[in-house]
Length: 111
Length: 252
Picture 1 (cartoon, rainbow over the protein chains, first blue to last red):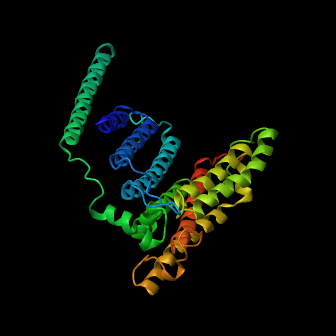
Picture 2: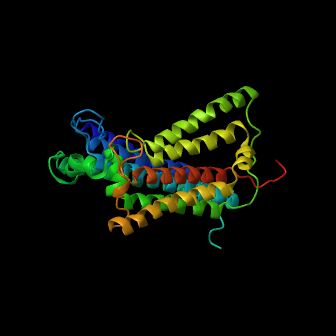
Picture 3: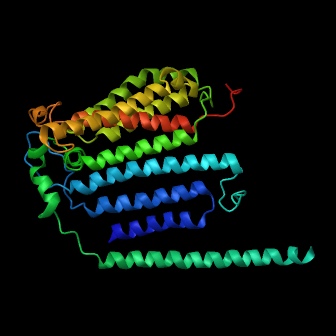
């Protein structure tokens, strides 16, 4: 329950930044916050109170947490970093051509 | 001229107010929908049945990797990891294509002498830690992606402390490109070797397995880790250096 509430709050902060802010870099930050909320939720959802799924040499197998969501979250983090880098690059380029990173002040897109 | 100057601000502020109200309603609706969704969702059943149970029960036997997360990433779902590194490759290619200028990256002259000497002492240890995280991916927490990010951090610290032209001269973009391509080709080559020797793309290579818990065990997982580590490190360094490039040569 607590996990769900934290997820909703984080996700809504990210969504707010994505929708309300006109600064494009703040939009990218909002997108990353939404991603972080999803990763947080996936990891804490699959936490059943066990250990990280790594065997230790010379010890009997104990209760493990689910390894599959953790592996998928690693995939998601890497892809999120790649998309954020590409978006920031496009913002750099946009700033060079139009002189602003405010999405409501961009001019010359109609040509 | 007088009429618009008097009415325009009012209309604009009204517009803004309406927009804000509308967006607030949308935000509240989304939050409520998420809350409803969670209250309807079934609880987590645990790991007694299904895929996760199978991986926990027989992952060590199947792959020889102590770290089951690495086993999922580079053995059971190695195809996903291949796609993931292709996404990084695509991002690097796009960024370099957009920002290509063929200029020396110059933005700073570096920090003071003390910081430079301290980093000179610390750099080998940072590199050693990165390589440790990469090569022990199947034994301890870590792996190719995490260690690669540590290696890329060395490159970024160099540009902050020694000035941004230092890293460019020491390790040219050609070197980084060769490292990245080599990592990707290692991954693909191991996948093709899986076809010829085991009968499936990216199948774990059986003849490479050794005693469980040693450094070179777990089939092709350590080699894939090394390839991915160098690929990610070089890729992130290329992204960073493309972003800090300057267009003006006179700063140099």
